[in-house]
Image (cartoon, rainbow, N blue to C red; front, side, top):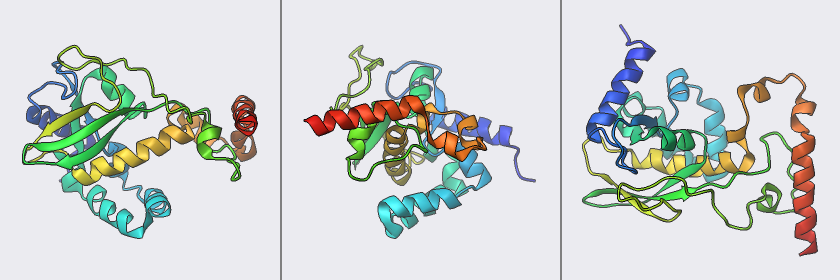
Length: 230
């Protein structure tokens, strides 16, 4: 019989922590959590249709197909190749699009990733975007400042955008393709404000009301006006 979700989750976490020697790969703290590069709920339910459409629209059919072959493969998404050991706080930020990891290169030693704090957008997913104005201005992220640096490396040095980390080579080291997809999708999620809304936002029956948030629209218009004055 197929394993239950709880057993699968438990086995996955053990595999990831065992591979990473039971420490956070970024802070060096013990007793880490196993963060999924590709979300468990999506891979478990096979709710891939919307994701495939999104990837194709943003990155083209060829790249979307390359990623699809990996995130639809249970032997990858349900294995340590889909996980990274993170302390509780870093895992929370990662799951909520407060940070993203840019895969830079694969070497004989492993995969080098670059840490990026992601700035919070003023937008929400269903808010109208004005085509004539750069979306970065509407989101309030054009100043290129990043989020707060609230985490530290094992050495005690504060983690800042641009710092690099090595994910050591291993038979079950993180999938390059899933890391690539994570890097792109987390930035999109941060930009459109998807990390700052609850499930209730998406199941709201009043689609017009959901798409119009007075506070968000006010901020959006203020940013556009500031841009036009510049």
